[in-house]
Length: 250
Image (cartoon, rainbow, N blue to C red):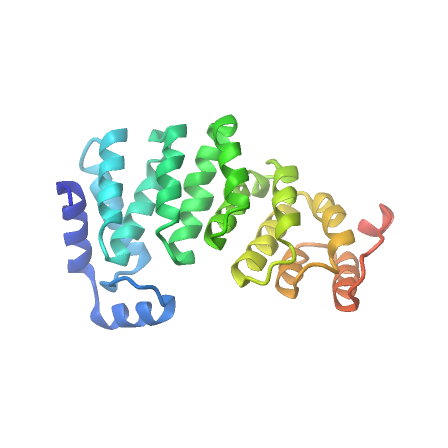
């Protein structure tokens, strides 16, 4: 482990609480060691470390890569937070490293930030370079990677922009999956999109609602107007597509 990573891990271990470590490991059920440090304290430790020195691209990548070799959960989470804070230092080719990290997460607690905030940053700034990577992820055998393909598109969709057609293409292929984390992610991204672009979500979901899981539908319809929400939920329960006119969508 390089000096930067060793310094960060030493700090995290000093901040740890044994009782919290036991609880966190039981909750996340991941094969890593836990120091028992809260997320706010990890964020604070990373922020202090970043402010105290000049961070270059190469130094960032070296520290992150070293932290990810640790078996300490908090070290890996610190690496993710570091990437989020310094995402502007990343270049398109760093998607290769991000994929490696994603394949060695094994828990939503590491995957989600990496996918939405780090891969998502690269997907926005280097769309041409990363789009084929996301297309490949969307068909990957590893459900965490498939989940990451969707989450990498989340940030601009949440803002009212983004590539909904790409997300819809990924989602249409995954809609029948039984994996909870896939079903939840589909609903999550649809819900966030619906807050600013409800028409997109209604038009896509209505003819497919009979194919979607309850987890997906209940999440997706939360921001929608009550009459529309009720129609879609009824379609889900009755296992039939919903035919909805433009006037019905308001």
